[in-house]
Image (cartoon, rainbow, N blue to C red; front, side):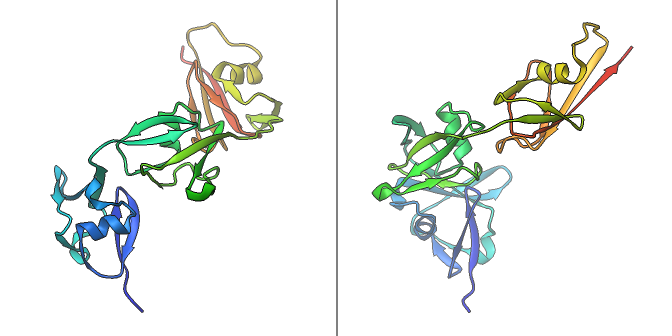
Length: 223
């Protein structure tokens, strides 16, 4: 059984069947071609990187798997919903791509259109590392969400909107919002949308909602 040598480029994992490889081969394995379009760097210490030339050899047995970084020499133009955006990354997550296109990842998913019209959906994986090339093309798709209720302090509360505010949750639990400056409300949630399944809220926050999302709200008096 052949040994596989694992390495990472831009935090994406790859493997080689041999330990001694050139910079060009590393980029080729990562589907970054032509290799001449990319700069390959190796992390030498916490302070910086050193460049690796296309024909320079690296021994994966000693280089480790965390130390490689690649970036295009020129910005890459990608298409999202028929609009062009310039990026400087070799790999991006659906969440990052939607961010540059000002698309809400809580309400939309991303579909990659590959050669031959093949569609690859990233609905259930917003953190997937996608290879970015000059031909990268994406479309966004509204996520169908049917919201019937949320759960606040272990009690079911009717709610059908796809967003909710900090103030909405306080009103659902307490019926009113105290004007006493000494009264503080604290809200935490779980089972949220894929981009942020759990977290906390502060006054003025508005977040996207999942059906049966769970909220815990407390009211304290600091006086």
